[in-house]
Each structure stands twice: as structure tokens, then as C-alpha cells.
Image 1 (tube, helix red, strand yellow):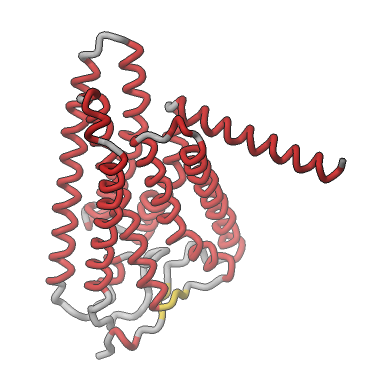
Image 2 (image 1 turned 90 degrees about the horizontal axis):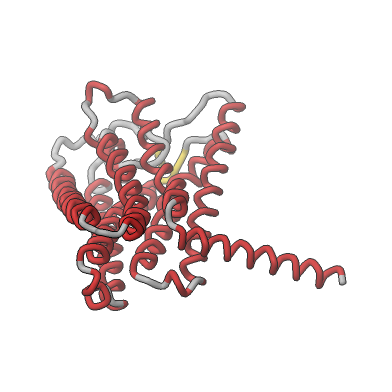
Length: 319
């Protein structure tokens, strides 16, 4: 019976059999990737450069943009390279790295979204204590805890998954290395350690979900009691983007991992994986900039500065 050391590479799921469709998928993924890089890059630059955005809410938004960039950069470049060069192969080390970093960024992003719910709860329900509860040190500690939880989750699942012997081939039925599909290749029937890790992750994820729901129940109760329509509008403009991002993140993740086996199929698994791995990183910047006037103003100011600076450089070159 072959063991894990006999597997030197894995074969990822191909998006198409014909060369034309492969190039079409490459172009589509390249567009999505560039949009995610541009959107999240603008958010990072705007928050870093505009002193008006140096607040806890935008500090956590900066962390979210970093995690989105990391998440989409873990899976999509390899998928684009495979489509462009007409191959399916990924090395054993590359697959393990992909599993580790994807789990790291996904878990850390969920933790950051939970921290952002706490930030909105304090800002709306306990505004007088906002400065004391969310000082710079407290924000740094919460962000570090979110990144640290992602790291521990990734180490736990990666080590457990790749310690199992593999004897069911090396074909992964997904466009990137994902733990459930790698476990299908194992010849070991004892998944006790990985089952324990999954239960631990589910417990933490459910705890974060309950915390977010309770926070927003209290937030909406406080908003409905506000006498000022302008105050309610401002509260909604800062809360609704976060709620939309959380809803998209949680709904696609739940459907991907908890859907009934009776409706599971390779094509459906592929579509769902595309939704939860590519959609949030690409759409989060758009969601946060649509209803948040401060972000829109900062991005507009940044683009104007970049355009004027480019014009000045061009004039110096020719004159």
C-alpha cells in the first residue's frame, strides 16, 4: 500500500478540455484577479494615506483587504497558470502550502469580520466608551489574535491532513487543493485527528457566528431608538456593508461544506468553490465603497492625486 511519501504531485481539476475554453477561463480569471488586486489595493492605499480613515473601523478594514488579497492570491494564480499552460499538476509541497495559506487567510478573515462586528457594536451601542475600549493597543491585539487564530487553524488542519497515507490516486476533484478532496485520497479510515480538528473549527466558527448575530440584534435595536434620521442613516451606512460581506462569506461557506451529499456533484462543488474563494475578495472593496462616503471620498482623492502626479511626470519628460 503506497503511503504519503510516494505522492510527489497532485492533479487539479481542469476547467475545460478544449484549448479555446482554457484560454477563455484564463482571461476570465485574470480579469477577476486584477479587479481584486485593484479594489483591495485602493482600499489599502486610501486607508493608509488618508488620516481621516485612521480609526479602528478602517484599521480592521485594512486587515480585511490584506486577507482578501492573500486568499485570492493563494488559489487563482495557480489556476490561471494551469489554464494557460494546459496542465493540471501541482507539486506535493505546493499543494500543502496552498492548503495552509488558504485555511490561514479564510479563518483569519472570519475572525476579523467578528472583530468588526464588535467594533460596530461599541460604536453604536456604547459610543461614550468607544475610545477607551478600542484604543490603538486594543485594536492591534484583536487584529493579532485574528491572524493568530488563522495561523493555528491552518497548522492544525494542514498537519493532520498531510499526515494521512494516500492510496486513492493523486487526482483532486477541485481547482485548488482543498482538505475534503485530499481526504478522499486517503487510504486510512481513521480520521479521528482531522475530525477533532473539524469539530474544533466548527465550534469556534459557530461561536463567532452567534457573536455576530447577537451584536447586530443589539445594533439594530439601538439604531431604531435613534431620534435622528441622519444618525440612523450614518449607522446603516457603516453597518450594512459589513453585514453584506458577512452574509456572503458565511452563506457560501456553509453551502460549500454543509450541503447535503444527495445534491453534491463535481460541477456543483466547483461552482460553489469559485463563489466562496473568489467572490468575497473581488466584491468586498466594491461593497464597502458603495455606501461608505468616507471610503469613496478617500479613494477619489487618491485617484486624483495619482492622476495629477502622472500628469506632472509626463510634463517634466516633454518640457
